[in-house]
Image 1: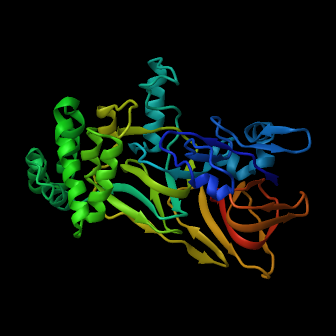
Image 2: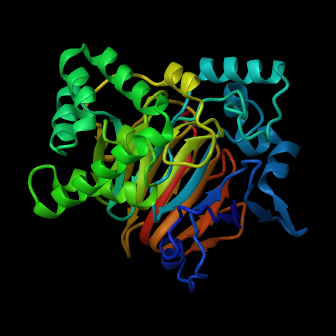
Image 3: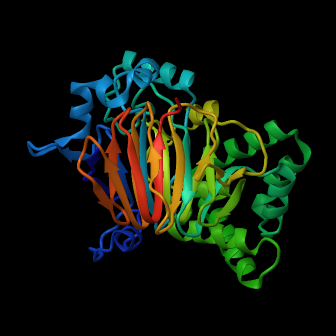
Amino acid sequence: MDRLANTVRPYAWGSTTAIPELLGVEPTGAPQAEMWMGAHPGAPSRIDRGAGPVSLAEVIDAAPEAELGAETVRAFGPRLPFLLKLLAAGSPLSLQVHPDLAQAKEGFADEERRGIPLDAGHRNYKDANHKPELICALTPFDGLCGFRHPDRAADLLEGLGVDDLKPYVDILRASPEESALREVLTAVLAAEHGAIADTVERAATAAGRLAAEGGPHAADYAAYAAIAHHYPGDPGVLAAMLLNHVQLQPGEALFLGAGIPHAYLSGLGVELMANSDNVLRCGLTPKHVDVPELLRIVRFEAGDPAVLRPEAINGEETYETPIDEFRLSRFVLAPGAAPRPLEARTPQVLLCTAGTVRLASATSPDLTLAPGASAFVPAGERITLSGDGILFRATVVA
């Protein structure tokens, strides 16, 4: 096993304090949005096996079956199929969806055929993989996930008292679910920016007033007013009002599958995702928004978000998801308890988020992990856990 040295990404939406507080270091004053743990080519973790620091991606490339195990290589190729992150949102991320695997392969091949450079601002598909993801809250965490039922969305918009929103309200009340959601989202995103910006501003002002007044939708209106504060006049503010506002408590999680519109708003969490960069944006961003392609990918299905709570089996608390590229679980370790054996035929990344966790192995030097510290465990290596803390485990479904 190896201690990981990880890169923190300074995206503008990142919190300036959440990751430094977890790591126990002084803030720099700059946003610190994500800490990446894995072998993603954009910022692979580094390890040291005696000859100096080396990229985990390079180590895996040199001996994929030894590091990942034969089963993982057979299923996903000679690469680590997941990326683990600490994610700290200080302001809203872009409203976005991800393609399924078939859509990603088709979209990537099409853009390759058309010769669109991988780093082009208008490129949609950076790779041929899907990007399901799981976010688990470490602090109270706010987000948007999936469409509200059209009637509920209509109630929310109507409550704002903005006349320009009435056509959307009428569509949401009169049309079948899928067509209502599709028609309203299309109208919002296709509107000329200057024409809709005033409507967005009036809706935001009303949302702020209604949040202050209280009532059953106060938390929702407060969230949308905060979004509008960061993205004044952005049509994505109205698109966001079609989505469910979700407030996770520490230990709760959300799984975000293909085609589900979502955005993270605030809070610190552990994110686990398939190794992909494929994002189609709906708004709340200065980046490229490809409305026709987005509408092809979005699943226009309403429903309440399924908040996940871990299922405990033999002391391991697992967040069940319907994919094989990754599985997230956690251990809450108590002082004085017997060391807990941990072995897998697949690779593992272990992250301490509280207290102190000790990792012992017969084949590697022991490691002690403080909050924010992490380790890579190659497939098949048997270790034991002990200490007084919380450890998250990311691995592949065997």
